[in-house]
Image (cartoon, rainbow, N blue to C red; front, side, top):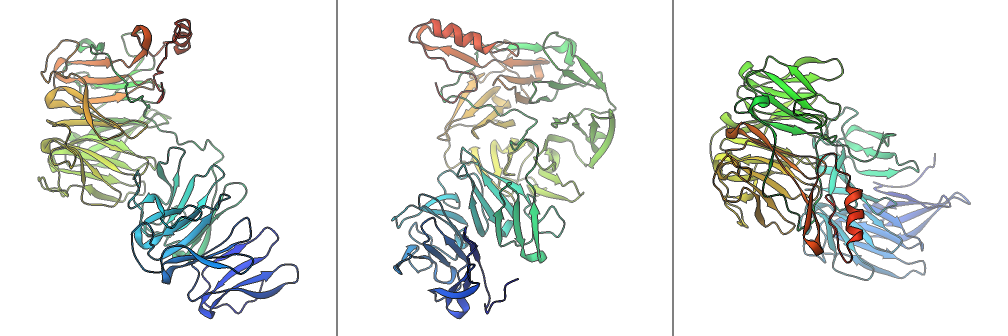
Length: 563
């Protein structure tokens, strides 16, 4: 324990030799405790507290002066300068608003938690304009921030953000996509799975995170999982080349003799196991492989006309059973059914997010409900009243929740797709009627899926087609593009549900044709315009070998983003 004369200390930084730098801004200085002789000395005069301190690899000292909206730097020779912000509150790229945590990498790039602007700014060496790398104003917005306060970079330059206002920790990945890793409810709490207005965080050498959980008056240790650090999803999100195409003629995966009349929903898991439901026999049908037309397994149920199905990574099956007033769960471990959510209308969309929160799209009540594992429940989209304003829905059906807890809703009767950011009641129209960048009209969109690059795939039921977005947020048709329902293999008749397999093939419940269709992703050998259908048992390496024989040809792999 080290005694000090500090007043209102905000930050601390320790160097490799054990010297401790501490904010003492209320006394007008930054102080250094010298480990060698255990004495205190002043090292920098300041006119406000340093809400962030950092010592870079050349022993330059940085102070984030929140009250003055700037970051100051002091060199070892005493030279001093403002290196981020102007000293005036603002939101332009050269300005800051109440900056807090800072981080300086080995290239002397300065990252600033620009708290009041709800963003993270990157200031390259000797540049006065920052680059918004996360949050409000980012060119690739994948997450909203609310008062970010502390930032870290890991060894791969992935960014970790302590999002104070949402009481959570957010992480970026190699594609600059952000997702929550802890405290993902977005609400403060005192239990061990939550934070309350935390102010600072730091890694140990094992990757565990220590957090100053100020609102709870404690320091929390968040252990790095000994399991795979890669987020495991139960559903497939393949990545596609921008020129990816699908066969214009689908094949019938299974027909009325197996799935019955008017089948409703389909789910393909990450192991390419296929789940659907026969409404006449009251059985869930499961294909663990496609060696036979008949399912490899069936599960008898007491369901009544279920509208949706979702399967988790451990094989648990969630099914709408509203006509019996609930959502039911089939537990794979002991093969038993339990009720998990009471509902007052059918769930035309079901989804389980990465934190095991359950979502039900109640079309008849014009809203989406969410239930947390602790039993808490809330409306997270829509008001319960039919309408077309941004906070309302009209007969919502399919839903999709990404790893940032952003909720996409097929707002069917409004002919649009709505995006509801975490804890936001107003949706953003990302496709269809009312979109700011209208590139396609929709008619009763009913099912939605995001691929691995966050491109949107829409089952446009009223037009009997599949729509895809690209990286420029332009939409175009990839199947059933005649807009006319029919029973031929190039058309659909009021389809209700779709799901990817891991190869990028699309499975669709073609309801009015009483069948499940498989639309196959195509691989091209460009020179000869040859294409191969990717089947679940197809050996892709053979295709590559074939293409190598063809001189000057380029193959596009099924999951590749580059030719």
